[in-house]
Length: 272
Length: 247
Image 1 (cartoon, helix red, strand yellow):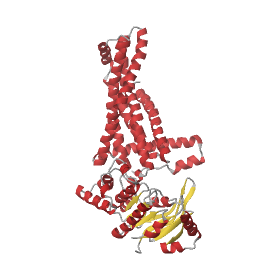
Image 2 (cartoon, one colour):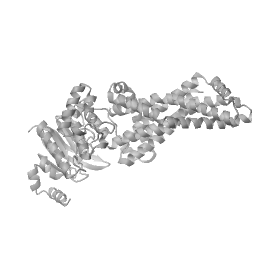
Image 3 (cartoon, helix red, strand yellow):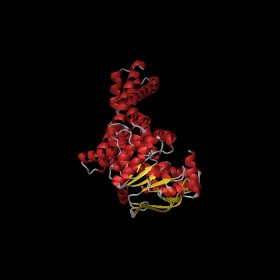
Image 4 (cartoon, helix red, strand yellow):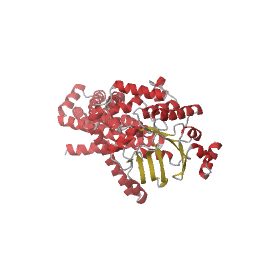
């Protein structure tokens, strides 16, 4: 698959109609091209994994998006859990219901804040790095060089990165939930007077397997979205260093928005 | 020397609404070195990109060994691209690979050669561009001239019979420029490689090219052998030569 450039229809729409219509056409076109990249990347992964260069890229990305961002993920999820416990705990205390603090924090983390924290960290750390790297390669004509050498950029560059993020995201999502739960427990025991073992008993008694699966699915989806958007923006970069900067910025913004939107949609579907 | 291997036939290309190529026609014979000269923005690199379908013409035809590159299917395009090596302005090497790994990349990805064969062909390509000593270095560790030579080694490692050079001497000092120009001629002589060289370096082009095409307003203003080019009374040629002397 070659890298699609802006279609002629988009240029015509932009030039002739302008305004909102052109933006909608561009948005739909971008969505379509990003979906094609995602499908092609997933489809070509077996072929990519069979080749040394792409396999190396996959493990490199796995390390960068996993071990590489672990300090950030740990800090973010710890504080998310602490904030959550504090806010919920203060309200529960008004009704003398602090014993349910663990349950409230656990459910919130597993269903929503674990995968959300993971998605945000992936978008900010791994996604931005991918968009910048591929954008630099695009403006430096390295991607064009790959095309000429009959090396499909989607198979060689996109597939290992997107799949690596999809693999690491559920693991990170679960890790975020665990660390957040510990953070909540620390706040509960030190500030709200909730015994840590009671907190954990409450947490484990209320969480269901479904909560875990939904959380893991959300994290998986976040990984796919972050990887695809980052690759798409990198491949679309043009205009030198400024263009790479814009592509990186767009990648982070679009990822944040999509993580929130898909978070809501999945919750809406799974918890009616 | 008579068989046409590349042909541009009335190619028109507009970018951002402005015509860059406006009925460009020329041809290149097998084993020939064609230099394409012209001022900045004349469409020299755009011309080159049409040959490997990084760009497609709005109208007209781009023929490579009988195949219309703009119209052919993906399989035919892959066959055309397999025959063409492309040296980009900045070398376009992958930053995380050494020079050797960069040169080996197209062969490894081809998937039908064993490691010994790949190593032998990489050594041969590096020797052809006199870059064996820098084989284990990363692109960030070598000079601009070495980057271009590494890019050239990668362009010829697949035993391409056509090599396209996009400003091979831009940003290089005169001594390194002479080395690169000498390499273009050497590869043409030793491997029979058909070469299309987009260049600002008219002195170099006069030395290595068999013919020089001067682009002006999206067309080939003249298409002459070097000896006739410098004597041409064509207004555009005189202006271009005067500008070169001014530099």
